[in-house]
Length: 177
Image 1 (cartoon, rainbow, N blue to C red):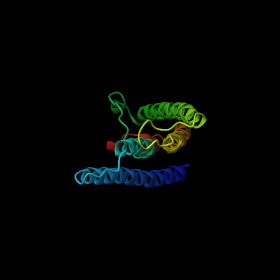
Image 2 (cartoon, helix red, strand yellow):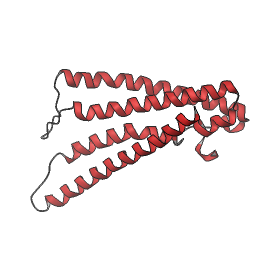
Image 3 (cartoon, rainbow, N blue to C red):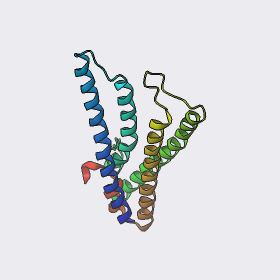
Image 4 (cartoon, helix red, strand yellow):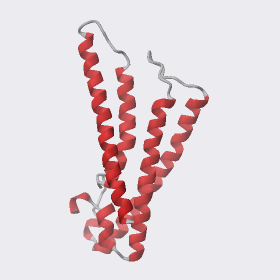
């Protein structure tokens, strides 16, 4: 199970780099558009494209935050516990996070399905077919749901084996690692 979690961490790191590159591309296009406006030219739609880039990068980037234990947690009670208590809090946190991620991924599909059904386009000059950015957004949420489910399963297995300190390595607090 540890090799699967390790693979997941490496994969999420690569996906985060790709998401960061998408954001950098968005910034470059926006800067080019701003400069081009001084010469009475404009690409148009940079705000729309940067919005898509932000949504896509966020949905793919949260998996990286997950595998690097960068999600915000309130650890007031957890910090006062021994390894077994911390492991229980970490397990509860990751199981809840996985549950929420799965629900969100499930609820994202109807948004895309409706756009496909109605052949929806953006209400902008670009008239972007909405299924394109929504498909990438949905895929990011599905990946996050899968990533969090894999980590939740790994943590549950470690909990059953009594390997409480190992739980901290994959689902604990970042400041402790």
